[in-house]
Image (tube, rainbow, N blue to C red):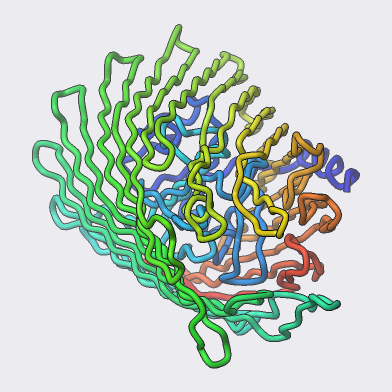
Length: 614
């Protein structure tokens, strides 16, 4: 594995790579702007925070069919999946827990109130226009959950042109998988619109291997998946530059899985709906109000027979008020307030079924002495469950004339206990405190004619980690006793040579339990991702290599999951300016590997599709 890492780094240094293309979601945003890092548009080369951006062009070029597939191999991000399409996917950012990642959909908090995580596996990738990944603590802007970072998903917005734009996409492949999708978008005077529908389904493969022994498990069946989605957006710009926009995304379907207890089929509904309006109060002050609701509903059944087992429905009501004030050419102030009401409707009788969180924040982005950039933010949150919490963050970037940048960040963050931690019968503990962290990061980056590169190192301490603790009768309850220390290095390099473009990224991670000095479970200690692509006239070619070191599936580090290497190939043929054929061969080497102990992953598989775009 080490020879593979160093050999690939040497190869990257003498051959390929280009940073993920920075195409934007529409013409109103410049190619190098990032929104999520400051909650307002800021040039990426003025930010100290680590940011990765995937555009619609990247999604189509990489030929990914799910959001976990897109995130897989991203710098600083580790994905585990318990089977194939639609199976439970967990995202670990910079070695923190899977519930330490804040997920937003068009600015609306998204995810389960009960579990505290987000269903990445259900997000319809055909309805996604852009994904921004901000690594490092961001609670000073967003409040709870952003210990490891923030992932914001922007849904399809379409084109702002008078002539309607139509896209169609259909295809099929291994495991009886199919996908169909279509969008129509355009502009009528000062109005714009977008409507998209998509459906993906698969008969799947057996999600889990048999487990021998008296407490064993065996369910040798194919675990299928169905997901149908709708995305709609409409907006209007007034003559005074004020704007109003309404957006809606809904996905529903079912997924089959293998479990030791409980049901083995879930019927789900995930929905985000919102309304936003913005206007200029004065020339240098723009105010935006956003109202929204997100739902995460799931009902579990036993199959065959479709016998009801349980229901967990989450609703999050969101309200945000943002104010961008340009103090001068070199100083921009952002202030705002957030309110969220979380509600639970479940077949389990929780001790409490709702709670609120209110927060206010301010952030300043300044340019000093032409080549120094500073971001500083502070936030106060009041949570109904545990009271008040204050977070802060400061970042610095120096862009040297010779294409070298120096970077540093420091901040703290927190994660509010989930409803399961606080209120689940016979487990929850209403006296829990929030999990809290402090992080420091430093790095150096380069931007040259031949390409771009960066190296970042970070150190994170987390206290009050919520851990299940048994009593004398082995009845478990949630307690604030866990402590963790995470040290890591991230590297990226990109260049172009002889028409080939590529990207190489590497993570080296040491996530430790400070009480036992053992590695935190389900985190790979080494990850190397390498992507290369080129166009030959009407033909596009690409390949992706992902290598990961081992991981442990339990806190005691007694169950090891081996490392692996996968290779994917892809190609596309442009029949004309409107039609394109594409094909992808995944896991070329037919590697039999796992990311979660006993759970299968897909062997060698293919997918072929045809696309239309006018």
